[in-house]
Amino acid sequence: MGTVNDSNALRTAPGRPRRSSSSTLVDSASELFLEQGYDGTTVDDIARRAGVARATFFNYFRAKSDLLWADVDPALAELPRILDLMPTRLSPTEAARAALVEIAGLLPVPPAVLVERSTTGAGADAAAAGLERLLTVRLALRRFLGSRSTAAPAVLDAFTAAAIAVAASATVAWVDAGSPRGPLANAVDAALAPVCAGYAAVVD
Image (cartoon, rainbow, N blue to C red; front, top):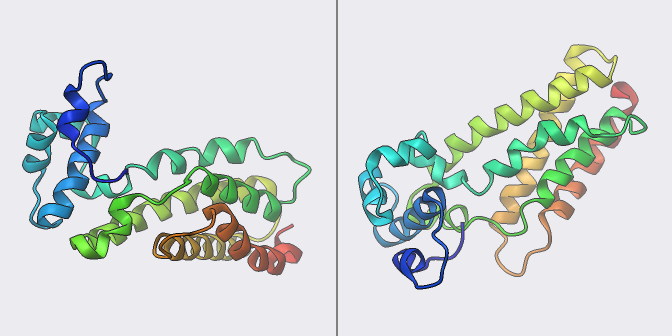
């Protein structure tokens, strides 16, 4: 999510193309979370600021907490496709590492609402919604490993959990690092390196 801006101006400035309702809702939510706090902002507030009906909000998002991850979700959604494209010459651990690093590379900057989650009081909901997404990522990675490795299921479960945990930890540290921060892909790659090296003998 970008920096706080005048979303009304974005929607009405002459010559500027209209933004999608989804993008407008995200920008409006970002503004309101900073202005009146996460808990003090309702879905109705967000829809009103965005200039759309309440029903339109639910066409794009299931809950207010989904707005916190709106800029991350498109990258996470790419994981199954990226895993499918991993060349067979890569070992299972190498492919898993490459795929997670590629996903990280799709996030050049951290979403402002996640950076400001403590300030706005969104920390608890950000964590809960983030866990749901981690479980989805874990399932996709585990399925991939099951198709590429003959290791015991318990071993693949352990490697998958470890890889996701260190990638998530590196991501949180990157979000909280402040500026200047290096690329997320580098941070995730460095975190995964020892995990993949440690599991290579039993997974590959």
